[in-house]
Image (cartoon, rainbow, N blue to C red; front, side):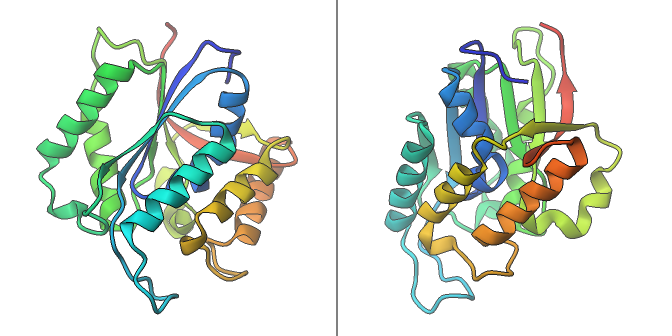
Length: 227
């Protein structure tokens, strides 16, 4: 799946922490192999979660993202909106598609990883806009477009059973994925919650068993081309 220094990998994440939950192993492994990796977080912002009493500011989320990316060896990352957390369904789809078109044109990726849709309106909006932006284009040499998992998607995974699965062996980097998640300290849930370091490790172990690895990340192929 990964060559040494040959790929330009674009990862689009609705929020800061989704990039690690879905692609933490991929990010670390691809950077270590000297590939170009760009992470785009669509939005951060001031928000209060049910598991916390205090409001988490967008500035805190930005700092956590930077720490996680630096830990994984990725120095190319950006945030599109700093005031739209949980509000992306109110952003016109045309605007989101335009943002993604611009990034794809400038970065010229060979692989793109986008989020599975979920119950969260931001994930739904990002997924739909990404699909539109990644429409077939003979001038774009994107050989792989795939969906990445988000732990809270598990209750509707049956919707994606017909899509080809791609497993990435992250046995040598899973603990860096977990440590990178911990950099998003404001988002960490208690043990037993799907978004907890313990559960993320279990999820990777489960995906590993499916593919004959110790730990793995699973991706769902939208398009695979031979360029």
